[in-house]
Length: 437
Image (spheres, rainbow, N blue to C red):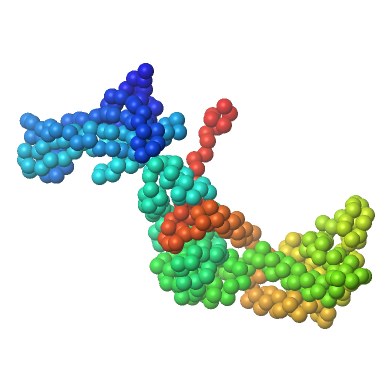
């Protein structure tokens, strides 16, 4: 039979003034539940109402009050602690009060350990309904606990890092804009805050909460090719250099080349030979066209659909020979990839200045976009610094997983609190002694 101290160790109760008497199992609301009974009593040092010290029996015992406290599950069963709290009467102010324990907040029936466990599980990719069921509380309670924990990670508007990362992601339906804004520290990759709108006027209203001296300390800002960011940075961060993220440069030309391939592919009839064979070749091997040319296999023969035994290089050459437009667009694409990989800004400029008359119209539009940002100096800085929006892109993937698991969020504040808790609450690292066990 379990002794009272064994029950305290089982429930991990640290308060020395709590003494447990018994542990039973009862069926409550159709569930088998652990019911623990105990008492909480001590001699108070002073009255919390008037502050008078407890001298010569100024404060006397005044009955008990039973409270039901939700505890963490034990052996997979919900656990309730029925605690008899000592009541006290103060003769100085004629007020009564109850004994207080560090295990639970005043006027609350949920233990602090349950709240801590809710906060730790909110970091994981779990729905609030699942977390509520695991702790035998309501989803509204989980939402309230997450909000309480997330307030610790709200920005204080007193400091900013030297480098900022700007990005956006698909937001909830309750916000005005279609996309929400997220920014992070470029060195530590830690998310600073999440805003419901990415438009210029909202960014200005938010960042103006930072003092002018704080904003002047920002030296670098990594963005995509969103024009709103560019104009907002000029007004808000006078000393900051803009860096166009290399990932978005590659993404721009990558998607443009793929659209050109689709355009060429649709010129062939897919219902009759031999044009059907050409259509299938362009459709099946689009990945090889987007692959970096230096990584194409030239000597390794494998079987490929519509080609038989051949190499990747031979497939790409065959596809490019089908259209001069596709060929020149591909050469432009590869020139951009080579310049970014080798970090040669001169090669990047030469590729942009190279006049390719047969290049696709959509790639010409992309080239003009790159030329515009090159004149502004935003792309040249990307060759001189190693900062990238890659960490934020990985963060956006986690954001999507949280939204999908929760089946969406009605309130942006709830969404923001959950994200801040998931992205900024880091698990404790294991010590070297524990890792060797």
